[in-house]
Image (cartoon, rainbow, N blue to C red; front, side, top):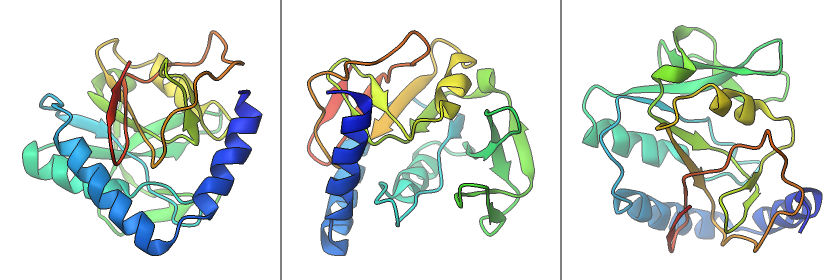
Length: 188
């Protein structure tokens, strides 16, 4: 399957999710996340989930990370002018503003360098059995992940199972290390 097809298919699947299903799947995904055997992490890049886009509730996961990794710094992406993202630990939970894509990002906060980040929760629409992902198509995360340490964990989150193969991956695509779903943890 090509990325464009996968994006369209999984946008439609997300749009069909009821609130009750999303709540149940988020709870099950949290259980999968807790059972994934992730190491202690000190610095995490998460993302502000968009309910309108049907994204996984990352706040359940970051609250768990804060509980299980005392002192963890949880950053959120802020778009830069050069089609990149900065990892910003917000000054407060209320300190988010919409960006050009109407995605909430920290207005102010402490910037983490990519090589400081231990774990990245990577947004995606679809992924395949090799850990390749189809995101929203702008390459922001691939550029950030390319600057991270090799041992930085790249964790995708999805309500759905993978497709067999995303056929049109290229050399700049950074694969996931694992993808967590409500029913399974895929390790790549």
